[in-house]
Amino acid sequence: MKSTNVHIQPVQSKSEWKDFVKFPYRHYKKNPYWVPPLLADQKVLLNPEKHPFYEHARVQFFIAKKENKMAGRIAAIIDHNHNKVHQETTGLFGFF
Image (tube, rainbow, N blue to C red; front, side, top):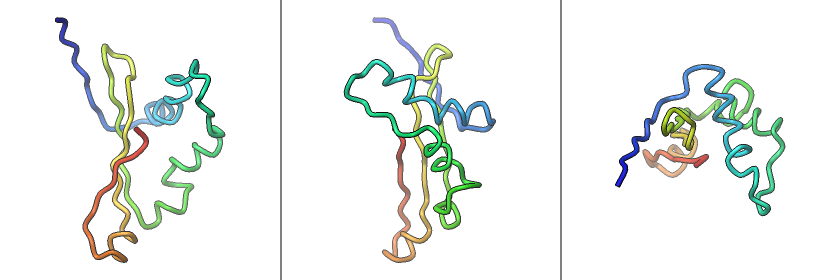
């Protein structure tokens, strides 16, 4: 059985952020059941400088690469308002 390595790396450049945003559009391109969200909306939603959610939350985006090709994405999120209201120290994951 062939072993393939997957490398996970934090998004650090504008180019990597664009890859993160556009990944599902490439990945699900041929899936007839996928209804793509508006790209402009996704660019605002995933931009900590533009979306109001990030005024009370922190996020780190990650991309997964397999054989030097993007194979997936994930975001690690801390919503300080959620934790304050629910008296928790919870982290969230999303954008699989």
